[in-house]
Image (cartoon, rainbow, N blue to C red; front, side, top):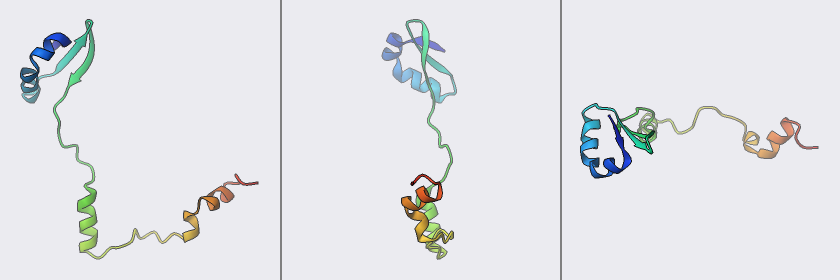
Amino acid sequence: MEIALREAKARLSALVTAVQNGERVVITKRGEPAVEIVQCRGRGGIDFDKLAAARKRIGLTEDGERWPQEFNDPAFSRRLLGLDS
């Protein structure tokens, strides 16, 4: 469904219901599509809080990389890349 901005303002609640029922809603401005209303859904991804809790539960306290501390120094990176004269 395409609907003008002015009408969308008056019917927002109905438009939200339509989107929740699977309908595509595009709001137009001056006759051109401007925005689309989409339903919010869980997008998956990583839950870092759960990950941290699981790592703690099984006893992992480090990232396991064991990089030398000097690698954390920005000056070291500049020397390595030849950016310092």
